[in-house]
Amino acid sequence: MKFTIIILSLISSLNSLSQSVDIIKRSDLKKLPESEVFAIIEPITDTSKINYVATIQGKDKNKKSNIEFLYFEIRKTATKIGANCFRIKSFERGGERNEAILILDCYVADEKTLKINIENREKNVIYLFGNEREGDNSTSYKINGEEKEIKSGTFHKIIISENQKIRINKGGITGTTVTLNWENNKEPVFLTLTGFGLASMDRQPINGIAFNTGGVNTINNNNLGLLLTRLLKQE
Image (cartoon, rainbow, N blue to C red; front, side, top):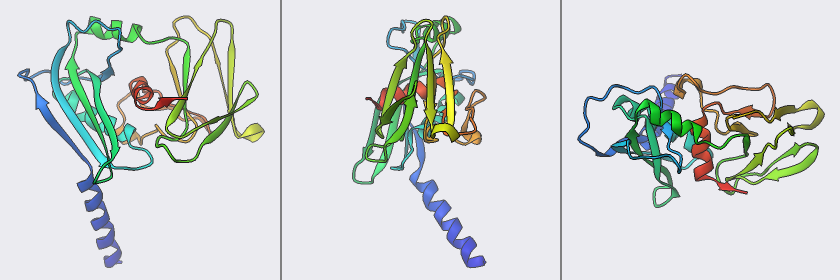
């Protein structure tokens, strides 16, 4: 029993050594209040009133699912020093140490700019994810009864037209079906067919995730969802 505990402790220590979040560059802005949000900056948002806070790097062993973990770990550090929005600097996998490394440039914006940034998001669109890492298994599903397959490392973008109803099913009659309708100014919807993107609750901010009972799950953290669309390929 003691031997088992020692082995588990060693494994835990090795895992913690492989994971790290570091501030690799920081501005002169100090003593900012801790933030409760960490929003991805939309490309069309006016950034003239956004101030740079820091560049933060998160890294971990190259696993089947890395992005959500790295995002939430970077988020913890960024919001503590007052950053409330970000842009992607880089993301890479592999290398000599076989790691996944995400680097975000972090900023602070006023409430008005953050509100406009949310309004700039595309409306009435569904983003559908399978597995995160390229080379893993593809995932099958049906959209309005038509068979589809989504490759790992990619996502499907589905635009909901006015008066249109979208039904997404995984697992057939005994599986799960999600139905979505067009709505005025409807926020983007992020669905995962594999559980990827559903980090454990202790890593999540308040607006974390929601689970369905079957094979189609909703990622309720829109900033994570949008980050995934920037880092994965649209199929």
